[in-house]
Image 1 (tube, rainbow, N blue to C red):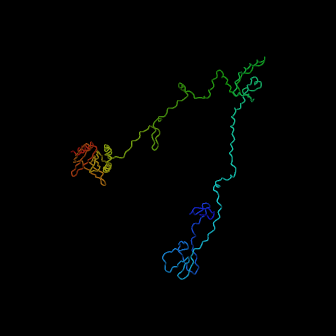
Image 2: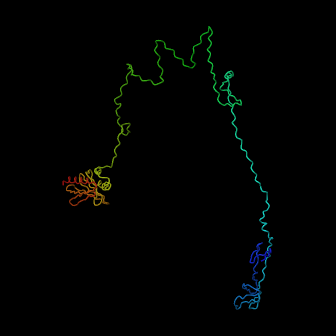
Length: 400
């Protein structure tokens, strides 16, 4: 197929030119609808392909439908309409530039600027090594004779002359001062020189006291006086100090409301426990901590039912009807209480005519207190020796 733009032959069935890329029209121009003048009926033909100016039948004839004969539609009323396809206006193909050889595209264009040649850096010379430090001027030896004639101390004389590399300290001079010459003798007929006296401001020594005069009193001592080895003799004109009064050294009575001063420390007071007017705490101290803890509520009830002035002689703890209970022997009665909820048992029994029976095994003991109309069984008593003692005390008091 030939391209209408560039005239290049392409393969059959190509839609675009392989050279310029223009579209290649391979299908015939399709028919388009022709507008029907106003006042005439519009007839639409079925889009069927037309070959050699022949129209393919579109199916069975429909009564009252228009017929097509050689591209002319005939209406049953006698009006004929031309429905043959009209050529559609085709825009001229665009003018494309002539094709270029692809090899020219690969050719590189001239450079815009000449290439830059890298310059080698200049060699950097290392700095020269540091030289020796400059020498300091040293002292110049000065002879003692020149220094003494010039009036300059030879040790303080220094030299600033350049070129001397000796910086060490000079050696001390080997000379010594000449001894002082003896003063010349005084001329004949002159008075002797005055005696040497102390410089002004020095205290002159006191002249010696005359013979027979008492020695002057001694000045104040600049240090503490030493105690004499023996007490001095008592002078008759000096009175001895009076003896201290008899009240000295006696203890001062303490004044109420005032703190006590220095004195002997006293022992701290023993801790005071809760009040125990009936002696229940003393009697309960013989019971172990475990049973005591279990019957704690029963002991509280027992302390509440004791009368004023009533003293407890012995007490044991166990169980009464499954509740922790306490059996007490006082100087008046036998008291049995327990910690039953809401209404504890409280029984006060007369010792006269009581009967007590005791039993024990390897673990605990039990006491049965029998009255004329009732009996109480206290079991699970952990302290078996206290149970035996309680039975003996009750029997002794009851006379049984």
